[in-house]
Every structure is written in structure tokens, then in C-alpha cells.
Image: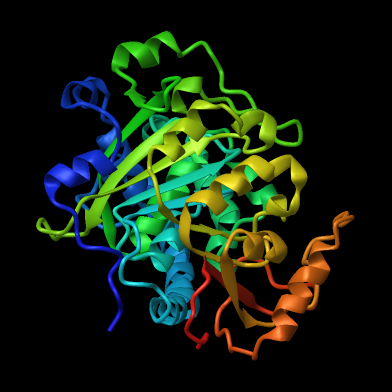
Length: 400
């Protein structure tokens, strides 16, 4: 039997977990749920009442062709990833995990967070990508719709085939008619049979509390374009209002199912961007969390990302990652043990490694018995081997 991630929260406790906001604050935020449902059905190919745009034969045919391809990819995704990873990981999850999950460098990948921590009530992802403007899909017709969906299929294919997204795929939908991050997140809901309940955008106050954006706020920010969060990235053509989003959802068709919340922050997590930021204050207010990262460009190896790494070491109670997770010596010094799965013989990406961190990871895998890993979780190693590790507080009992 799969252990639960803590008890399901009561509505009063859930209100505290879901954000440091008052009911009055939440009411001022504009809800884009109709736009979210349209993207859920037309782009992510979820079930629901046919939207008005599909009453036209040409648009209906375009979406039918798109969804035929997407449903094939999703079925492969469920077979090769969901059905293998979820029961495998469930055997290792402690019963008393926090209901909150923090996923740095988790652009577009709500689905992996739900696979890894299926009982989580609140999931926070952070990446360079902006959430995106949800209003444009409703205006697409004919060839514009066909081209936009083709571009989206190209972009999301990495997530559905390899269970993570390459940077070039993420860049494809950082602007344009389909909001890439939002669509990826909704794709994850479809793949795991959830449905969206609300979509709001927000900004953070200096103390890390959430301020939801009203229609007036969004109108006021319309002329201020969101800029790239790193020099190596790309600018968007979205308003800055559409940078951070909150998506609430539950199991499809089950009105008694717990309501879950996913927040995505467009943020550069390097030391300059994270240290002393409202985002850091927001994360600190969560207390202890479950954590994960995968396919994260080895940024947690980089001293320029030591602040987010320190946050994780101080607040995680359980973490699942590939080799882009916490370096072994730092984890050991902070009182953690790391359990390895699969095989690791070297970093997937070429990188400068003056600290010899790759050697630490290689030695970590060599010291432990080989544990089979039947699915890809993030990067393979330099030889194409699947690998995964769990980081948890050091335990007195023998590792399984």
C-alpha cells in the first residue's frame, strides 16, 4: 500500500497551506478559468463540453488531428513513465511527508511533481519561464490555429517522450499564441486525469505574501512586457502580469476530491536573483517541505546557486532527484543520506567541474548496491544510463 503524504488537510488548514492571503485578497484576483478550460480542451486535449470555437468544422478538424497525435503521446507517457515511476517511488515515500512540494528549475513539469508526490496539496515550481497569457488561444482560427498547435506539439514532445523538456523546446513557447508553461501544466493534468478549477495570476509582496491581480491590475500592466530572467534566455511577448500563476485543480469528475494548488514563479534562482528576494521569503514561510529536481542543468552543483541549495538543505525532509540534485558531500555534512538507483558514470552535460563533484556522484553510486530503475527520471548519465537518488535525513536503520 502506498503511504500517504501526510493527512489530507481540512479546509481551514488548507487555506493556510495554499497561500498567505485573506479571503478578501483572493476575491480581488481575476479568475481566468474559462481561458484555462479552453486550453485544457483544445491544446492539452482534455475532456469537457466542446468550446464555441469548435463549432466550426475547420477548427474542429484541426483540433481533432492535433488531439489524435497528443493522445498517442500521452498513452505512451502513461505506460513508460506514470505506470512505472509512481508505484516505484511510492515504496520509498515516508508516511509523514509535508503536503507542500518545492520544485526548483521545474519549468513546465507539474506532471512529474504529481507522479513523485501524488498526495501533495500544494506544489511550487520555479524556472526562467513565464506562465503566459491565457487569452490568445480563443482568437486562433484556421492556419493560425494549426501552426500554433504544431509548434506546441514540437515543444511538449520532450516532456511526453523523455519526461523532461530541453531548453530549446521551452524557448519555442515563451511567446506566441499558446502560453507554454500554462499549457504544459494543463497537459500534466490531462495525463493524470485532473481538471482545472481556477487560474489566477499574482505578484509577491516584499514579505513573500501573495497579491492576486485584478482586472484593473492586469490592464494597468498591459504595456509592461515581461523580460527574460537570464541573459541566456529569451524575452517573452507577454505582459509582466502573466509571469506568476496559481492553478487550482482536483481529480476530474470527483467533487469530493481534495482541491490542490500549483503555483509557478518566473524567477532566476541564482544567488543574485534569490538572496533576499520575496520568493525566498515566500518559500521560508512554508517551513519544512518535500523537494525534487530533475534535468536541472547541474545548477545545484554551481556556487552561483548556493543560496537555493542552502534553502533546500535547511528545509527539505525528503527529496527525489537525478544527479542534478544536492552534491553528496554537502548533503552528508548537513545530516542527510542519499540512496542511489540505476547507474551513474558521469554527467550528461559537458561542464566545468573544478570541485570534482562528478567524482563524488560516481563514488556515491559505486559505494551502494545496484538498485534497478525501470524508468527515466531527468537526465540519463553520460553513457545513457537511467539514474535517480533519494536524499533524506540520515537514518539509523539499514538502507533497503
